[in-house]
Length: 293
Image (cartoon, rainbow, N blue to C red):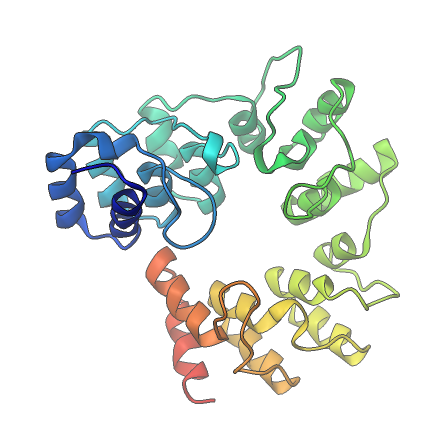
């Protein structure tokens, strides 16, 4: 098999869709596929097969790839410098198993694990092209990163600031960044901390409330003038498999037929895709509900 962009892309889709026999046959025919980076089968970036298998939480696929020589640590330059272990930590999947197999604990992994780390100079390449502070999970790590020159305000390529990332990770971390390092708690971070800002015009606020699972905040934001379709909030509830949130948003006026700007897909499409890709069984309830609307 020739390793073309098309053939690698097809292989990565087979990995992402959990087609074990097809992947096994492809690896037997072309062993080099196992560590080849290519176009992501579902969204952007250029991951390797192991990245996709970890993201889609397919244990059997991870085992198959490792048996055929997949790099445990990955070549991560094409995927915003996210290693398979970082993805496992983000997904809450196979973390212990990957560590037991010897996955490397670099700075990003140590930060996400909340473990001790020892560097005198921060690596130049930061995952997501943002700030190392965004990955801190202890107040001690925040302080040390700042001492080493990490920015407390640099947004990543998705527009998320360290404050917003830490507010999502835990109130104590966000409060420490504010009180110890003088970083303003912006409106999105306030919502992630369970607060309602005075100005609710930012469309990202509703999405933050949905992703936090805070129905009370969603209701308050809409009552104060936020659009129930802001930041395609229903799509995000559908992806999360949050049926109660989906019902609330629709009751508040969200459109079930709204198509998102990136994939031109409806909330139902998002729920079905999430079920297929992430295996989130909670999406079935959302799918059944949206099919009746």
